[in-house]
Length: 499
View 1: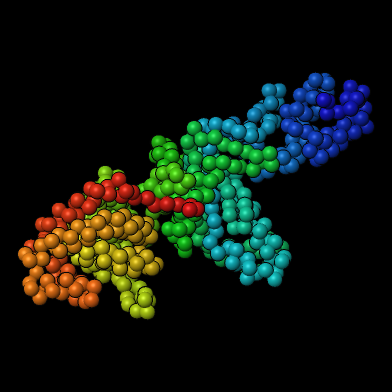
View 2: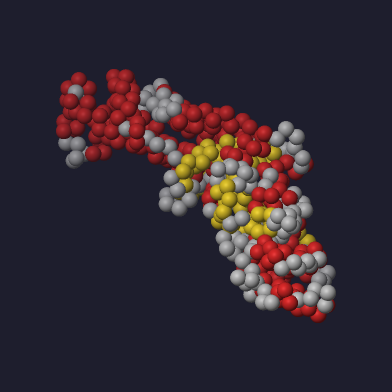
């Protein structure tokens, strides 16, 4: 069906008719009667109507503004890589076209960023509506400028969320860190207020997740021009992960393809990335899929400790992957925690747990894990090891000064070890009960027979036995037996997302 009624009757040489035609085209676009811009161009071509490029560009910009959603600023000059990836170009006018609604992309990246504390700051300023409006203008305009400098689309999403879309891994990383730098310092917004003012937007921390670079992943663009599908979900999960690991500091988490593709680049182009490093964060799981992740960060003195622990973290991840739960995982964990405590800046942090106040510092953590290694390797005292690991994990989870990723490994490895520990205790108690005459004195035998009545004394005896030389070898055998029986259930996962 033709878009225009009696199109052939227009005499283009007649200025009035030409103006009417242009108005009709605008009216059709505004009233959503044009399904695609190529449809409009083809209709004009079939009816042998030639309109100047200037008008067609104006009409195209209007069409994009109404139909392309977050992609409305996309153009072939500024965003040529994105244009090639996302736009189905018109054969006659390659500078015009239509958004692909579903495509297998060769290379595209999404960065989702959250400005910590911005919503709270706006709440505190909510009585001044004019100021709130200027704040929004500042955020929207400056984020767009930061992104466009690196040929990346950038815009404000819901609340304090920012979305960046690019077609080059170096550009998306550079744009992300440019936005982080923008918010890392207080900003003078007097130019947005229209009057001279001493008002400054305070500095904010930012959490970011970057996904993309995987050519087999489909990209979905909705009818309203909104991005949807796996890429957006993955970037959102990674941003949530960054926020979990560092709720009060800036952190950027990326998936493995960002890391691989960036390291393929032989000549780096942007100064903002000259000190960029990656820290292996291991695998996380969401929606049944395991994803290899990395932290992308710019080197600072505060982050220096990561270079000292990265190999130990890789060793721990390898031990977990190889199911070395009896021989290697625990030692790798202890070595990682000890080195982290040694490498971090010195801290003294006061905690209150279970109505008890105490101070924790680097040396306390080093001593606790050194003791645990001795208990595990020299004494086979697995009861004490599990008890200590429970207590210490709870403590360091409440520390602001300790690395959150290392803390997470402590907690999750404890949960895995608790599975065979139940069996191990049963094995050991059965052996002791069957060999009381060999292991216990007469008094101890009577006490153990009345275990339920005098439980406290019983556990004291068990603790003494666990430290005895007579049981040392047996305990190691039973510990190994327990692990072997439940090895298939011993799965280590760091989960990200909704349960």
